[in-house]
Amino acid sequence: MKSSFLADFKKFAMRGNVIDLAVGVIIGGAFGKIVSSLVADIIMPLLGVLVGGVNFTELKWVMKAAKVVNGVEQPAVTLNYGNFLQTTFDFLIIAFSIFLFIRIVTRLTEKKKVEAAPPAAPEPSAEVKLLTEIRDLLKTQERK
Image (tube, rainbow, N blue to C red; front, side, top):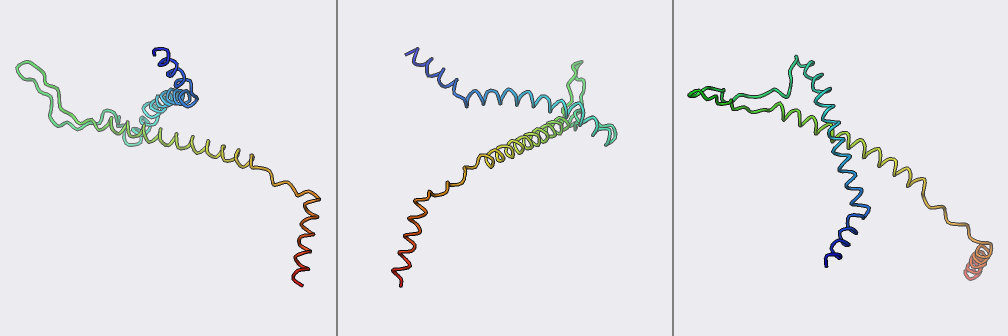
């Protein structure tokens, strides 16, 4: 029973689709980190300079200010919408990048399909041509 389970698991894990999926997830994770860095370290600072030196990740709405009660500091209650903006820009750029990648791959595969189109049907042999002519002649004689 145990060896059957392990054999089934090995069969499942070694199928091509599972391995392709695992590679895709790993590359996707690395790609996500690259895009997040692009957004956080390059795009957002440039955008911040364009809108007057604003750091988007620090944007927040203070709903309740911090205060000290009996010597214990109570932190402020904030709504950190800057992080939401940062994450939204990350998502949009990742989605756009994946769209471009899929579009390029689709166009390349379509070109391969066009290039690999099946060859035209072979021309009929001389015997078939002759038999076709005879058939056509017989049809014209029957009509007369």
